[in-house]
Amino acid sequence: MDWLLYENEAKSKGYNIICGVDEAGRGPLAGPVFAAAVILPDGHIIEGVNDSKKLSEKKRELLYDKIFSECLCCSVGIATEKEIDEINILQATFLAMKRAVDGLEIKPALALVDGNQTPPLNTDVLTVVKGDAKSASIAAASIIAKVSRDRYMIRLAEKYPQYAFERHKGYGTKLHYEKIAEFGICDAHRKTFLKKVLGEER
Image (cartoon, rainbow, N blue to C red; front, side, top):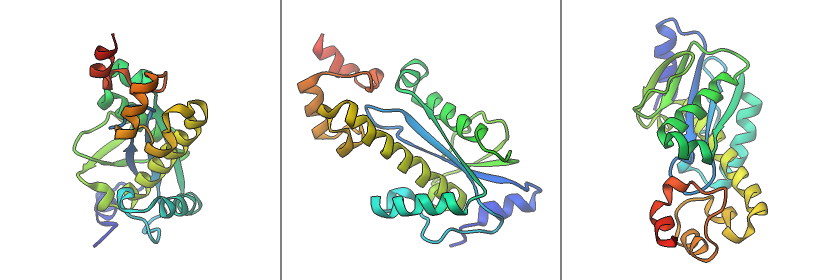
């Protein structure tokens, strides 16, 4: 498989600086949504990089450091639980992506974005369905976003130990629902994702 197919095609059209963009945490009941933007050196593939969902946690952690050391630049953006509740998860994901791209030290000419929906970024955008399994830049961004969010949720578990965030990372697992039933919700929860639970509590 040609991991640089989309990057090389974009370069052939005159885009000299290309970043990959992906998110982590659209589905969970708690915690922010994270996005990452990564610019790799021209023609560079980081060994071992793949769709973050196909990698073990240990492998992702190792690649996280490798990506940071080998990329030209990298940035992480988030949208908070409050923002998710206010503007909805899709718009919050777009906001996190915009913050990630705006945070890059080098301004990209094009953003390769995972998925089929185009976020309003301050650069040209090309969406790539299942891009984290097709593009080296998007795959790198998927790992940075996923590891950054997982680390955040582990820190959040120290603040709210009763919810075991370090185990489920905020996703709607059986354990997480059991904890919500026992302790109610906290400020880290996305209230719009828990309307049914909140309705039952009232």
